[in-house]
Length: 107
Image (cartoon, rainbow, N blue to C red; front, side, top):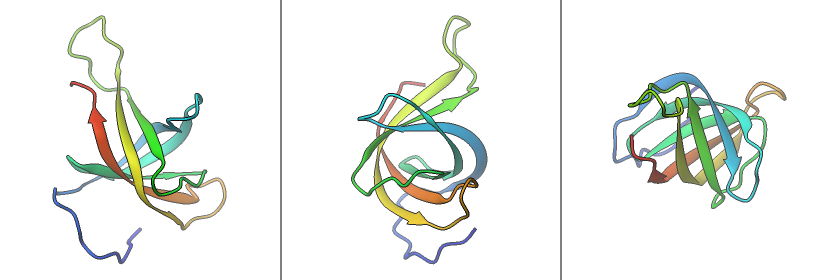
């Protein structure tokens, strides 16, 4: 899906189609989402809940290769929604959010 927004990116983006989990910092339960693209500074995700600009979120990427056997095979990234859009049909990634990374867990 293509969006005609002015280019303001500092870092190169890499296209993905990866299931992730997302939640607002103020909430406990993660929601299913899809990582559409990412860069060193942020990401675009699609999900079935609207997230407001300014809202702080936690993304969980499941299935990452752990550095040590005893580590959990997931990574969390804290970020802030910088823009949001409604673009799809209900139940199929109806909403999109551009997220600026705030804190990256050590990888």
